[in-house]
Image 1 (spheres, rainbow, N blue to C red):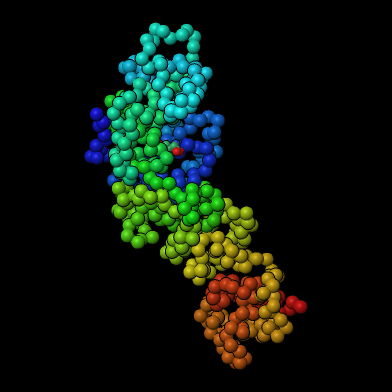
Image 2: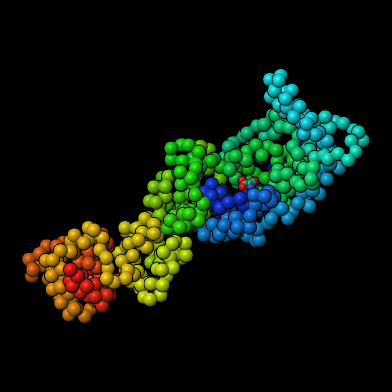
Length: 481
Ligand code: GLU
């Protein structure tokens, strides 16, 4: 009889990545769901690094995953546990299963196994391994022959998974063969390691990808034979691309670090990721406390979610508008460590360009979808003089325009209060007295000051550049041939 972890137990959930690469989008969502559930229930969120595959595993990948989690602000409790470091404990439990008769040594050779497979194929039956060693007397064991340890799994009846997302899922035990729990080299297998670790770590709820559903059945069998309570399960659907196909790089299935480099905010990332499989009415944006209040594993959808980078962009734009300027500025500065021209901009910042960007930031918020838009849009602020206008801007700076800008500069020189409002008043007055529409002044002015034809309000631009820099750029334009 299965006994399950009680819903009254204090919640302990875990994220258990295999460190073979970056924190990918599916892993980030699994981590987020676990983190939210822990927060929602006042429980704990712990990490286990499933580093048993020594060839594929790397220290670099472990740091990349932890880095990704830190960036997403998914803080964990305690130190991450290394699965590999616990191999002795896994072996101890395998021996215990052996001693209690719930596992047996299997001396089947590769050749014998292949022959059994072939026979099944020839007879067109589906192959399920029944090891002759399951019922053979261990005293018949061939001497000095390698063996594996297999679970003596039930042959009859069913293994039932009561899943918070998938509902009741039933496996006929005769379909599940006797799982190897210890390999011939003494190394524990994945399912044994996960059960022992989850048990020892006191995990109450296992929230992970639906690709592990069959493992849940196998793991349940191990729990039952050990007489341990089975954790509650929540197997979350996969993420598909916007076209419904399995998510791949083509769809934007990149590592968390790639989204950081593209200028997404962690809060936007969390908002977007949580919506991949979970919903709360039609809401797309949530504060962290709303998420913690509303999130529940029972409300996760069974159907695969679709990844849509445009939606992510829209959520990011929302959060850019709703993040305070100082925080945005700090995040832009952090981002500089990850982009190619970052060092150059950092130097310009140290030389005073930081104040210019700070000043222009409020005017840029509404037009920015990512933090990179601030970097891109702010480029003219720290550009070296003389500015080289792009082709469209150069076209606006013909002889009469340059002459007009030279005259405008004389008026601006007189201005003592160099803020957007008086700057605007001066320019309007100048346009009027020259019989020009405002745009006829503003467009060449923008071209001269930013080297482009698009920017936030030109008055904000001038205020951010400062009087000296504005006049210097105008002089250089006026005198360029
Ligand atoms: N290490 C497994 C993975 O990265 C997760 C196993 C689990 O959550 O039980 O897919």
